[in-house]
Length: 407
Image (cartoon, rainbow, N blue to C red):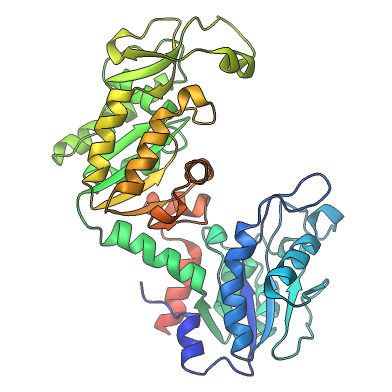
């Protein structure tokens, strides 16, 4: 992918004395008191900022936080907690600036944080007037927010259209390189894991990957629908019966290419699922795991994980893969009784010599739970953006940076 990279501009001495506008992804979780509960995204934003500061630029950073109403400021929407944490990480005060669209005062070698960009009218719709104002604030625009790369907004697309220079920051560049390595030029065999609750939410991903991967591993509720497509009973498990045809089409697409979608041979179930509405949380907490052959699932069983035989076979495939793309857990891994499938898959990926890329909230939670962060080739910071790349879509942020690089 031909894009201009901020690191190259720094190396070429083109950043000193310039006004640099960095679009970061600082959309962090907070508790009811407004305290940041997990700061990975803030820490991930630091390299781009430090790069600009060390080069002698006047640095402006902004991000969205939550889902504010444009033009209506509420304290809960403020980036104030982020400014404080960013200051701690940078070892300097980071001033928070409000009402910044018409002008920002910042000295060279200094950094300011611009208040929640989604408070600006026209941000979401990428209003041209707003975009031109944003572009006028800087000499160099740096997009370092992969998590919003799938959205064409004022601070992700519009500003890149009109800024004097538009480039990718180190975090976005790393995402592009990892995705290219995993999908555009993968070492074979390429194995993808697509798991989660519903086929409907990932159908286009399954369809896109079925045309390019050598193995497509399904898990969670998605696997149940594929089991039904293979003629197996799933009892009272989460399943989408109206998408059995779509699952069959994916299986056939893979088969036509000499590839496969492994159907679970054994599963872990909870027996005696009551009829009608019931407290699933309470049921799950009290449920005892029972391993059954996939052909022996009873009408009142609920599948909550893949079985040990299936997990071991999939692990063998992953250990011999050249590239692994991972999105989604194999079962209800948050509950110890039903975590073996996800844990086995995670450890196999960690032990494999394959280049691996993982993305999605539940996937990142599993990686953290099993302590394999250092053993995964690349952990994507984007949820929706990661999924759209898997679908084969060209992300707006990538598109405009390519256009600008082409002149």
